[in-house]
Image 1 (spheres, helix red, strand yellow):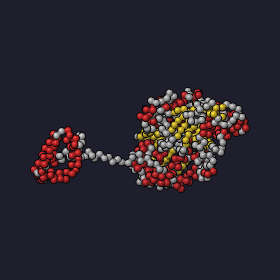
Image 2: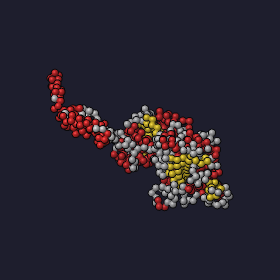
Image 3: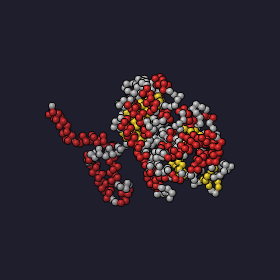
Image 4: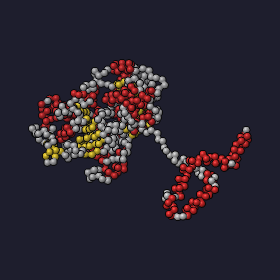
Length: 615
């Protein structure tokens, strides 16, 4: 059979060799139109570089003779040109082909591999999200392909959706559906506010994906939503996703058997470093011992390995990774993308004498988002409150967070600012860890709505802006829209908290600003922040509280309260301390809270981790 096949194929080759004219002329008749479109243009370009026949006639007549001779030869031998010309034709043919048809942008949610379900995509379009953030683009494909991840990214980068969307997808893709008592996803958050915020996002995702409403498990004092109510809600709804704080989750898993974790698909430890810093190490160990080994685990944090004090937080996260049972985890550290390094270099040559090189860090080296502008004020201690009042009056129509170092300071300054500011124009709210859970929830609702609770008539609102006085309990994970300023009246005892405090503004690509008050003896903290890659500059003259623009008028109680009087080119600021002293003398409650605030401030100041600066 092989010999027969060779005999059959051999004559075909001989026919091609012996009949070149017939076969090639037939082929050239088909290929001629394409060859003539491309080759003559090249030939003319080589023969006539100047591109005009009149220029050839003016230069030389020899070209005419050569042209005539070549034309007569072509007319005598018409078959020679197709024999020589078509041979190189196939080579240049693919050259005009580079017309790259590019796929959709890799940052779109539709480009994720494996693809997302229709319900999740509907939820994304409902939120009007056009493209993924860098942390979402890095985490979601890996998580969906059953990889354990440990993620560190700046605040406001979209970490919540980065783990909620894969969790919902894992539950939807199960071949065996979960029973009513089985849990498919577990999210552990350090604070009630962060857990409730994650719950609200997960509730919308589950609604679009046709999953049962998730269950929120947060603890509290006496009279706050007992455990039995949570268990009744779970038995009725049959939630597939549980979100809560470590204490309440550990309590339910130890005392009750209603939540079955044997089919758990995904475990998320949100703000993992805070979970350890707040003393939940033993509680987390108990929870992890009750979870199945075959699961996906994700650790998410906003603290980078180099920003915590002495790297202690990074070491604790590594220990938690080992204890949580992460199998070959993928470490994802999403830094800020480089925006325009060349422009930054060009700007650095035009710096003034007051500007220092570390004020204009390249974006990829910043520890804070590029849309966030950080400022500082160096002011004596007796002028801090007066300058804060002036700043709040100038930004009365904006949402502002003011951080204090202790809960007692929040209570005292909450009463003081309500008296120093006109209550009908400014809405002041307080939030700290010692408040009852219900009061904390209502405080966040009123602050988000500008002084109006959910469901109330917003037309009754008198103040356009709102001010929230808080401790570091509001420094992690809280996402309140349209916060223009974060003010730190007291520097944080843990320097790593600075990044989380200022991260409450400029979230999800929005612009924002931050301001920190420092005394002349604490100005070394500015260089400390710059070493930690935080770009920070002194506040500009456009702010009335700036020391270069204004001066606190030290006067008696009967001084004029007009803080905008211009005197010798400087804006005079009314001293607020005399009015505050008078308030303490008249109100016993203010006096007692002021005493507690002072003692707690001294204790907290003594416990600063940067003792060489705050001494």
